Amino acid sequence: MERLLLRICQTRPAAFDLVGSALLVLSLLSGSPVMAEPIRGAGSTFSAPIIAKWAENYSVSRTDGGDFTSPDWTVDYELVGSLAGIMRLGQPEMDFAATEVPLSHAELVKHGRQQFPIVLGSVAIAINLEGIDRLSLSGSLLADIYLGKIQSWSDPAIKQLNPELNIPDVKITPIHRKDGSGTTFMFTSYLSSTSDEWKAKYGADTLVAWPWGTSVESTQDLILAVKATKGAIAYAEYGQVERADLSIAAIKNKSGKFVMPGPEGVRAAQAAVDWTKAEDFALTLTDQPGEATYPICGATYAVVPVAGRSPGRYRRVHDYFRLAFETGSMDAEALRYVPVTEPLVSQIKQYWLRTP
Image (cartoon, rainbow, N blue to C red; front, side):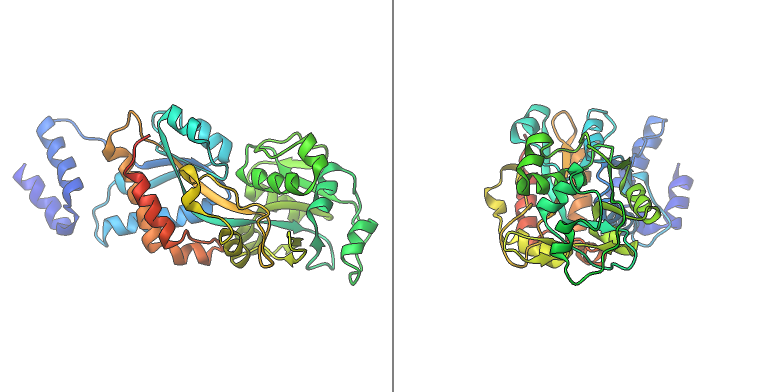
């Protein structure tokens, strides 16, 4: 036993923090290995890029530049969509779900879960229209497109908003998500806020019985479909659309201004809400007032099972997101998200001390 301890310590003396030492000692004393497990999460494709980057940072930080590592310092995240992520929380091995659809206080209490925002972002309207780099669209016009009432890019309603553009006479192909998507929820929340007909027929939801167009799974599938389809229109997280080099529409906000998606418009929307008055941080950033506000944006929430779990288990999730909040803001900004503010981080850390 002394030789084994010595050999591992020589490999990486700094590795023996309390967690690593405890695991090794328990393993040696019991005669059977103590299984280290990754933090397991599932859900949102909207926020998947930053969750992956934070997971990389977490592993590097906990390893601290040495050779010794542990599955406890890794994050295993599945891109299955917000709805499927919440559904998977019923599985005992899952540690958190990521979703753009905040759960009610009653639902959280019923299942013994916590909920807090981890990052904010915007939904871009991507188009594939030859010769058109930027288009102006309104919420009511978008609703009419997705309702099937407007099916050609040369429709007078589109030309009226874009009189300076020579828009080709091409069929519109709406592309949408067929999985339970938080991005779909944000997009249909906006349509519901600007179109009474959309609100009455479909409302805001993660799953929609789309009246026409093409349905695909995941953000990346949607982006690929837009690239491959002339006349396509779709909705997806702004940073991923921007990195795909797709044309993006400016959207009319409540003040009548046409605003592009991105961090500036999200910050303006966040300035219009009060997180301190939102129970379990559940609020909407959709269609907020302000001339600089982008109207299709929202937050990604982590939903964490607490009841029936050991504190050590759910606090690992807290530790992962604590490090993300404290050191991951620049990474979020580089990927075109908006980090949560320092006052909001302080609220979240206090919230972690509570148990539902």
